Structures are given as structure tokens and as C-alpha cells.
Image 1: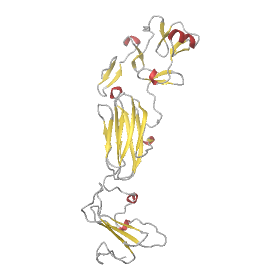
Image 2 (image 1 turned 135 degrees about the vertical axis):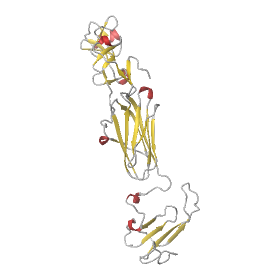
Image 3 (image 1 turned 45 degrees about the vertical axis):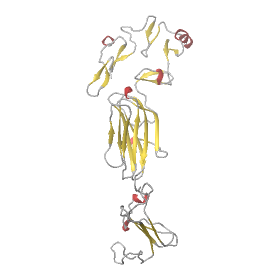
Image 4 (image 1 turned 90 degrees about the vertical axis):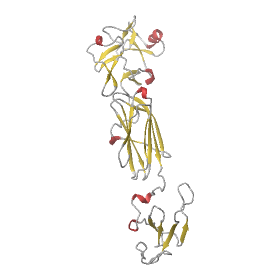
Length: 327
């Protein structure tokens, strides 16, 4: 990326204005501003075409002033109006402004700098913008990353979920980077030198809040689109009862059934090796082959479901078995 009329900062690899003290220190098409040489007209020496003069917004205008908007439109065409006795162009959106400017719609003026998007203020993690997901996905368009500014977002997941976060942009317009912080574990960043940044984090055991940080490289600024897609847990998906733990008799999940005091023990002989106690609606015994995640039949031992009355043992259980003590 070349830096025409500017200098390249070797540390950040960003184009920066050349330093100056007066307009004469800048190129013919630039003027001296506090931050350095910027594109625009100047007064000393004047660089506007014959018959024009440099206006207060650093754009050339018709010399001699104006009395009304109609005069400016007659002299210059549509998109001109009379401001403070001089003809100036006006904007209705950012497309009518030069690079490094945004349109101040209230005044119709192009203002130097970067206009934040509608999801600001979200420059810090504590002020992250909550994302509202629908069907495990959300897309936010029309976002802006200004230079030296960071955009933070957040979203929630249940236990076992992962996420794929994508920032879409044109690298030629400015380099953006992405970092994702899951509810537990280390953050992960994407800092490529091409279009778009993607971070994928698979299953995260903990439920909680994820944070997304989008920021420009150096003094770059750019528009972007943010997409978040949740990745469902693979294999055995943890249910809501897992939030407090239900992997042992001591942490069994109790289900209230009016008028019944029985307890059901799900004896899981699969590789998960888990045991769950529930309150059943009826008594009985079920036995069926386990299914794999792809829907096929498993060759592992079947799962037994045994509904226990007080002081009763499941069929086939030894009375003195350490995990099958009578209740």
C-alpha cells in the first residue's frame, strides 16, 4: 500500500500526514493542518483554479461571494448552496465526502474524521453492545471501526457451545483485526493481511458471556460487517441440569411429581459413565439399545432405566453393590 503525499510509519505500517509548519511545506494539493499536511485548498499560496477561492471548509468556491443558493446552483450546478457569502458543496451521506471525512447531515458539511456507527458507545469491554441472536446467528451491517478506537460486543451461550465470529471488510480500505473472548479459556485473535477476519472456537464447557473486540490497525479506519454463528455441542449435548451438576447420586436432579415419592435411577452403561436420579411419573423398567450421534445403532451395552421404590433394588443388582445400595 503506497502513501501518496504522506509518510509510512514503520512501527504501525500506517500512512500518516507529513509534518508541516505552513502551507508551503506541503504539496500543491495540500494545506497545513495541526496534524500535518492534508488534501484541500489553501490561501497562501492559493491553489484554487482561476475565478475561485479557498472556502472555510478547505474546498474551492466561486470567488466574489453569493447572495442565495440559486446563484450557486446556477454557477456550479446541483449540490451547491450559499454559505456565509460563498458557494459550497453540501453532502447528504458519506459518499459525497472525500476519504477521511464523513457527512454531518445536519449541516450538509463534510467533516474531517471518522463517524462512529449507531452501536456506539462501545469502546470498552464494560460497555460492550449486547448482540441479539436468532436461530443461533446474528449479522450486524454498516459498522465502522475508527482509527485508535475499539468496538466491543457480547453474546450469551449455554454449556458446551462454541462460536464462529466473522468480520467482513475490504483490506485495501484499512486493516481490521479481531479478538474473541469465550466464557472460559484463553482468547483467540485473527490478524491477517487480507480481506475478512475469522475466529472459530469449538465447544466451551462453561455457560456465560462471550466478548468480541474489533479494532483498526494503526490509524486505519474501515466499514465492516459482523457475523456471529453459534456451534452446537457435538456428541452428547449437556442439558440444563448439568449447570449445577448431576453426575452422582449426591447431586441428583429431583423432579417433583405430586403424590409420588418414587425415584428413578438412569444407569448409563455407555462411555459417559453417568448416573442420574429423577422422580418418575410411573414405575417400571425400560431397556433399549443406545444410539450413536449419527442415528445408527451402537455396539456398546444398552442403557438401563430402573424406577425404584423405597428399599428396592434394580433387577440384576447385587444387594451389596457399592453403587446400588438399597434405599
